[in-house]
Length: 55
Image (cartoon, rainbow, N blue to C red; front, side, top):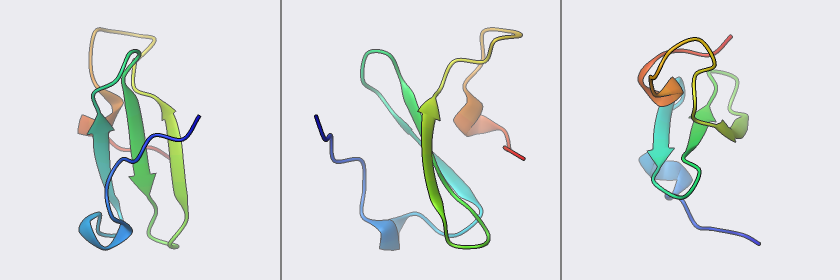
C-alpha cells in the first residue's frame, strides 16, 4: 500500500519529515538527493527519528 507523505519539492535535501500513521514513519531526503522511509521509533528512547539525523 502506498501512502502519500509530501511533495519532494516540499522536503529540502538534508531534511526529514514525520508521517503520523500507525506506526509513525520518518521520511528522509538525503544531501545526495535520495529518499528513504523508515520506522520513526527510536530503539534507545521514546523519541522521533525525524527530529534527529540519520547517517
